[in-house]
Amino acid sequence: MKYAFLGGGKMAQALALGMLRGKVCVAEDIVVADRLQAGGESFVKATSGRLMKSNAAAAAEADVVLLCVKPGDASAALEEAGVELKDKLLISIVSGLTVSRLSGMAFGARVIRVMPNTAAMVGMSATAIAVTVETAENDVKIAEKIFGAVGGVHSVTENQLDAVTGLSGSGPAYVYLMMEALSDGGVAAGLPRPLALDLAVQTVRGAAEMVAVTGDHPALLREMVTSPGGTTIAALGVLEKAAVRSAFIDAVKAATDRSRELSGDGN
Image: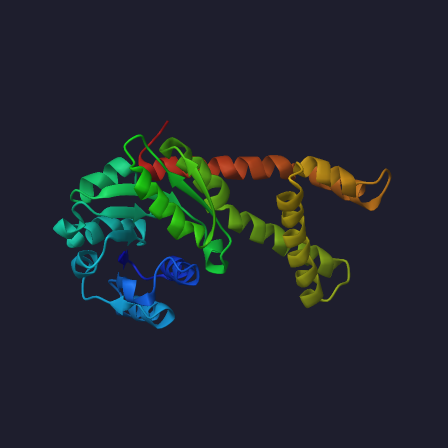
């Protein structure tokens, strides 16, 4: 099977490299087109794929076309690919463009929307695939194989994809902000900055792994750390007083609402 990437940026490179590592394909199966010469050349250097002169030329080479451009560039990219998309699988990671809108621009392609996140660059993406009643089972399997090479994959309905964007699509930024604040707290308490950051990183990584490995609810694991009258309950009291829990909930809701606005879905 041959794969064409329309857009050769960091996410496209992360996907292609994951596919190569996971033996989904070999470099000879991958082509790329990018409106910026530097983007295409960077993709080729990283993956050993082939750089094509246009989106149409790239799509002509492929069985599966991955749309990895910025939202504002999607319409032009699909228009240029044109009839070369007909009867092919188009997988879009572009936020804000529904299957219906993509289908209207994709000249007879079968369309699947996918929302990965930037952790795909280290093989740890939280990815959601939007599946409709019209989606062919084999197309879903192809998408699962591609994105399973860069992390965990979940099937959702398209109307859940805005919430996925608000939680896991934007979520890495929330975690980075938290890690930055934790390390700043360590510095304020007297730790050298490199040590404070290392401790923050390992703490977040370890806590996430505890949830994943044990399957326990985070609330239960939090209680395990919280001794009566101890340091943790004192700290948690400060966080609750600052409404940190509510702030995270509101952040996910705000990102979800913004995703709905971008996709033209006010519901």
